[in-house]
Image (cartoon, rainbow, N blue to C red; front, top):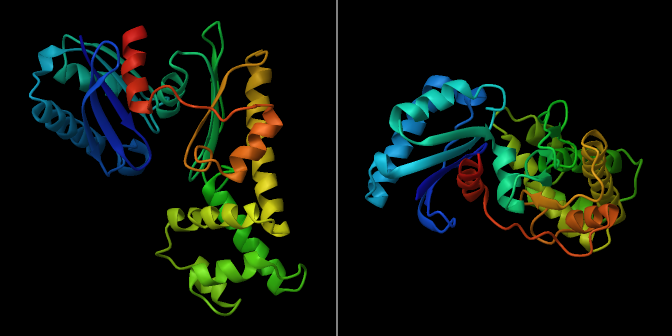
Length: 296
């Protein structure tokens, strides 16, 4: 039985064809966002249709051969009907299931629709599903009003720390010199033009987090303090879900580049939760989408 999985996150669209045992038979990646909140419904509709057709053609598969389809879409948690209708128009004989991108990430990571997933990439959020099938989401409010513990937030906190050092409220540490070198600036006043550059993308600020974590690992006190605050925010997302879903020692998985590569942020969060070993996801989110369709 062929099943299609679609992982439409914030910046990349992945479409895969899977066997019944979730063996990936063909995978296409498109470096484009499919978030309707960013590019609008019409552009998403066109992008999805073209990417699905390209994937079918690349795998030499007819749409009629696909028996189930699962899709996780950023920004789709409250608007799944139009997506389902779009998929039905291409796969009229398939079982179709649409959910949020964090739900397919959880299902893929755990290999089932149960547990907690904590994410820290550019942003941050947590999602959980309990034994009764009830789900809850915490965080994920975006860079302006939330996403504490995510890359953008860590980057902004780093820039704020530099201003405190420049004003004499904090002592200069390794972090100060390394960030100035990383940003290719030589004077504290240059922070203003760098940060407020109208062409400055959120991702560029979020990338500062990687250097922050590196410096924190070497013992820099200011960097460690920022990362510790980030880990505590992520821990509070976890506690929020445990409370809302009446969990007792739920299985936990991590997602996002800042929590899946052995970083100090990952280590601190593991310690707070009480995990002895770093979580190892069973499947990718795109495979999780296919699995979601199979178990629905």
